[in-house]
Length: 314
Image (tube, rainbow, N blue to C red; front, side, top):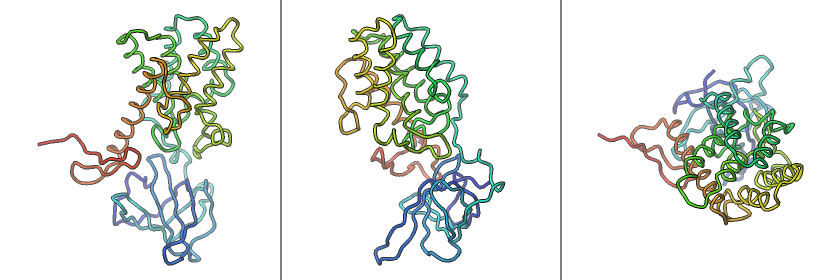
């Protein structure tokens, strides 16, 4: 298997990949071409089919395909110029080669995260966490293996538990350092802030938005989950439920980033900061890990809207 992170400019590659996206486009002179995103467990790469010849056989998004392509560079990113393509046949590929996975131990991360439930003093909050993580018919089974995003950050198997644990540990570090912070609310909402990603995104190898995820989104679904779970717990305080729902609704921090509310409590603000820190730092980490260029500069990151440099020096 020639993995995507092993591709180098100037070489020819004949290999199987997952067709993540497929778009029919028009060039400036009106010629039809295909724009693809291909994936394996090491990442994704752009690909173009410029000439629609008889060697370009029928395939669709979500198919495993075999390609014959030349590796080029466009805007400092690798790109495949595909000459031949067909659907892959059963037995020609190993599905495990197309599921990106965390480098960390999933079970250890999950057990550490679940251990935080025991540190919660408020019995209503503790009960809510137990209901969501230990008894929910979907979350209890799928959370620890799910991704945290389609392609932004932690978009790999185990990414959701890796991201959630990091945000929770950061919040645990921050809680005693500031006055007026309710640790139970902060830790619980750190654990819950992205839990609805389990419903928002499908499982691998697709790892794409479900209808519910596309129409509603994990922020709304997460707040709804807190509301509905709290409603089933006898004596759950209405104000506590509202404070927790606000943390979920505000964790993206700014309205332009898809947050229905800006943080209006100290817990919501700290959660947003921890979430933003982990997500964006992971973007740096992933870009530097994938960088194959010479020198200190890894290139321009579109999401972060800046050039990224390694901190090496002589």
